[in-house]
Structure formats: C-alpha cells, structure tokens
Image (cartoon, rainbow, N blue to C red; front, side, top):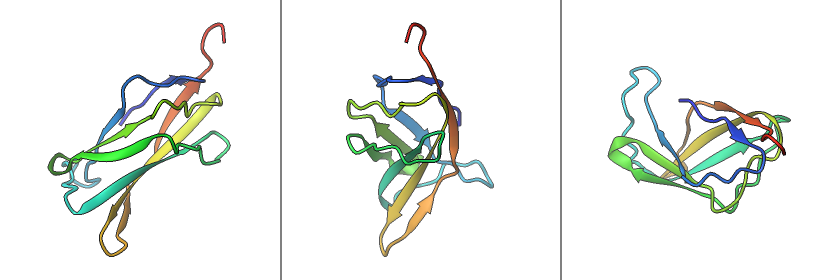
Length: 111
C-alpha cells in the first residue's frame, strides 16, 4: 500500500481508506470478527502522534475495508518519514495488527 506524500500542516479533505489483505495470499481479509479498529501514527523521531480528533472505522467488513477520518486535525508536523499501523480489535481481547506503512511528509512550497 502506498500513501502520500503529505505536507506539513496538511489536513486531507478525504479520509484514508485501506484494504486489509492477507500477507500470504494477498486476498482481502474478512474483518467481520472485529468490533473495532484504531490507527497509530508515528513521526520521524519514533514518537506517537496525537490523533485523538480522528477516528478509524471498519466500513466494509466482508471486503476488508478500513477508513481513517482526520477529524479536522493535521497529523503532519515534521518533515520526514512517518509510519502508521492499524490495530484490529475483537472479542476476548483479540488484537491483530497490519503491517507498518511508511510515508513521506514534505515541506510545502513557500512554507
């Protein structure tokens, strides 16, 4: 999956959409067993980025589609290589993670 680049201070107008795929088969994963999801963002220094205004939702469980809405908040404060990972949460403390996705944040022209 490819993301970005994004720019320092940017608040994207559209949510991020992800299709969760099985690493071995590349097939879409049925997410019906999961009751929720969260997206974790990390800046270039390895620090967690506060994304408390945003929210993650499983929008099409059979198709494996997850969406992150920014909630009007920029998560991009530093130039460099950022990362994200989605945590899928199910019953009985089940917690599964996607692979880590890296993306670039650039300085906007004139900024």
